[in-house]
Image (cartoon, rainbow, N blue to C red; front, top):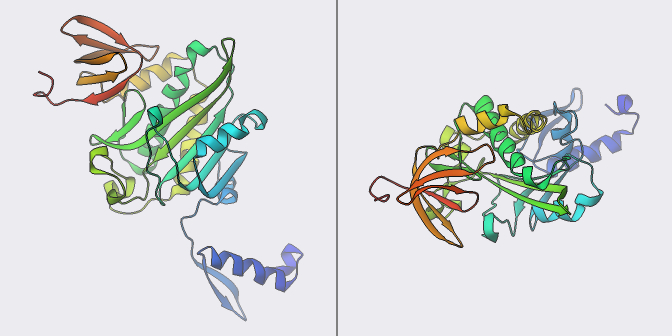
Length: 299
């Protein structure tokens, strides 16, 4: 190994020792050398990059053991980073959801932010969220066989329980988008006791009965996002987004600053709006908290 790498045996040993400290189990033999017996589920940036099938997304990738928020790190670097930069963390101390709500980010999840710089008018920014929710849903199904439906406007659910949240924050000038930072919080190998019951969360490991490879999933998600990103603005993305919706035809309550609306979702518009049939007629809803209701609650 030393000869092949052009370094000393002491340098090899130093790297082996570093790997063991990070949780890798490596056996040593005076005649056979080293044998990797266990690889921990760590978000190693080099390992993730080495297995990426993307052309540009994630080629610039940073992984941290702990941050306050991957979105905050991404926003602080966005101006100087290339399109497609990815920020990952094992844990977040101040993870955020919509409306600055706290987001639990325990070890074992995927807490990731993307820096995207598409050339598009501000009026079309919703298409980014639409494409990414489709991509994450496709990645979870193709890799793990789990159907994650899209709950309007920015969550993914498995059996009516949250598996992923998406938070997009943008910077713009005079109607022109400078960049979008898109945060993904995916409950991968996380115990349900790590979340308050009222959040109605689940995790991939809970649904499958075993842990998943976070690295494999991240690589698949980035591949699917790049594919979807390059189709932004097409009818294809809208059709997939609509077909994967678990909010269609549901009785819902929409909570917003202007008050609550209760009704049945008639359709999802191409601009991302929810078309809600209420007792006062059909209304277009562009933003708000969406709560799925049972039949009795809708009355």
